[in-house]
Image 1 (cartoon, helix red, strand yellow):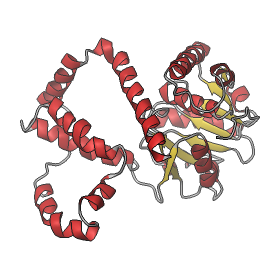
Image 2 (cartoon, rainbow, N blue to C red; image 1 turned 90 degrees about the vertical axis):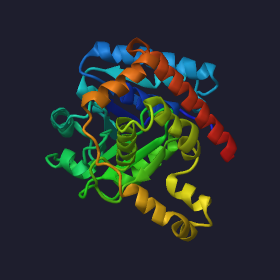
Image 3 (tube, rainbow, N blue to C red; image 1 turned 120 degrees about the vertical axis):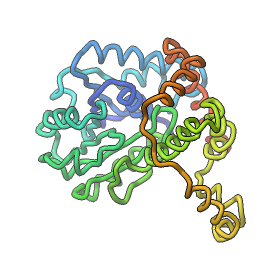
Length: 318
C-alpha cells in the first residue's frame, strides 16, 4: 500500500452531524485538509471530540483507515463556524444538512456565491433529485448528489447522481475521490426519485411491514429472514448475481422460477401507510428488545460488526 501523505487539497463539509463527521473522517484518513462547518461552534467542537473518540476506537480494533496516525488524521480536520473561511480555497464542498428541501435551499444560497471557480458542490441528499436541489444556483453546472449509505464510514456504497446540466468533468472527479478514500461509488445514469438504494430498501421494508400486519411473522423473525438468510448472501453479492448463481445463469433462472415469481408477487399488497396498530406493534416489539435509551449502544454494536465485515471482505478479496 502506498504511504498516505497529508495533502494540501482542501475539502469543506457543511453540517457536522453523523454524515458530515463520517465524511470528514474518510477524507482525513486519505490526508485531505477538511474544514467542518456548522452554524454553532459548540456543535463543531462536539463533532471534533466525537471524531477523536471514533478514531481511537477504530485504532483499538485495528480498523483505522490509511497509514496516518490518529493524531495526524484528527489534525487534518479543522472546525469552522465562519462559512466563508470554511469554503475559501476548497475544491469540493459537501453539504450534509438534514433532508429538507427548504433547509438545503437556504444553505445553497449561502454557499453558491462563495464557491471557488470550478469548485464542485455536492449534496449528501438521500432522495431529493439534483435538478430540484440545484435549479436556482449560479453554479448549478458544478452540482452533484453524493448519497452515502448510513453509516458511511462502515458501509462504503455511495450513489453519485449528476443533474442534467452538471459539467462532464464533475462526475469522474467525484467518482475518483470516492474510490480514493475507500468508498464504493455507483453512478445513476438518470435521475429517479429516491435514487436506487432507497427504492430497493423501501420495497423490502414495505413487504416486511405487510407480512407483520398480516400476522405471517413477528417483527423479529421477519428481520431474521434477512440477517440470517438473504443478508448473508447480499453482504457479498447482489440479488441479480445471487439469482444467476442459483441456476445456470439468468436464462436458466427464468425457466425455473419466472412463473413462480410472477405468481407470488401478483398478490403483494401496495406499499403500506406507516401508521396505526401495525406501527405500534413493530415499535413495541423492538423497544422491548432495544429500549430507546440503549440506541447508542446498539448503534456501536452495529458499527463494530460492519467494520469487521469490511475487514473480512477486504481480506477475502485479496
